[in-house]
Image (cartoon, rainbow, N blue to C red):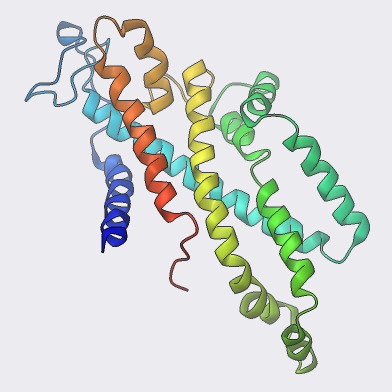
Length: 255
């Protein structure tokens, strides 16, 4: 019962963040009420430009979670596709693993910064930087698992009965890979959100006018001694998001 209650809280927190798209934007500038403490008018207080922190926290969480979910889905699909293309071909597998080792040797944030330095600033460049190396763990999981599944007699039996490659892929391979991929996706989503937050914190992520938790932290640190609230809420949001994602790690959804 306790585990189900915790799972319900985690799911509710994620749904609350996604509902932030209906929160009404990133807040309006109001210099008269800048750096205000929490009140009935502004439950989370206001930032250095007088914008409502609750509205920006909500919009920033929805933006970070949506961006992370989309990139995680891309990483999973790309890793699965690359593993299928390389499986059974020694040279292709060797090239894939060599490329994965090369990218994995560079920390994700540093790799994203290197790519952003070469590209024109913008959302497209940010997405390309975040998508560059995230497929690696999914490809490795699929390659390792496919090596084992190749020896499974049930696959040979399905092939002898006339099952096509698509049927074997959808009915036999993917359902067996899904629990491992789902567990990795729970970890990968948190990692994408953290890297995006780090890039926004450094000022090379999302534009300043678009609320994100990393960007809010980056601007709030200069006003911490005057008002701690702009720094507190995005920090709590990141912590809550990682804890919520940790609840789903290793739990397979209904198939």
